Image (cartoon, rainbow, N blue to C red; front, side):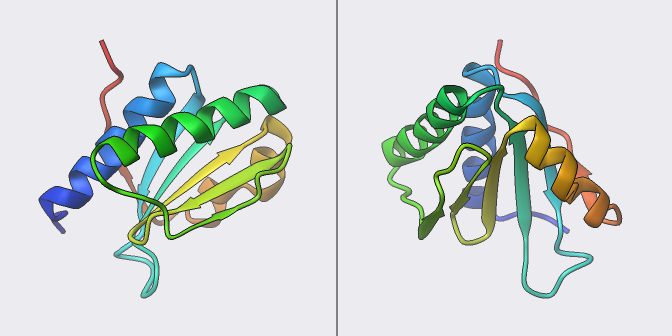
Length: 119
């Protein structure tokens, strides 16, 4: 399955924002083959509450620069922030929340999307 160019840009820019702010274990999942209602997840770990907040802010600011605003934001909390960009859901989680909810395990049949770190 191919992604529309605007979705590719959305995923790439959200990834870069997370990478530049030192998010840990950034994973992109293509859910289209295994879900009728979800397209892509971008999952990242923040090391503290201030780090989670900085990661959320970085994604929102980076995507706002290219004219994209979230449809909704769940949280923020000290454990998990969910940014809803329609076809892309960005999950920014504490290490404990990420281990407990295990989204990668829950969606183990999804395809992983290879993204390049920023230089």
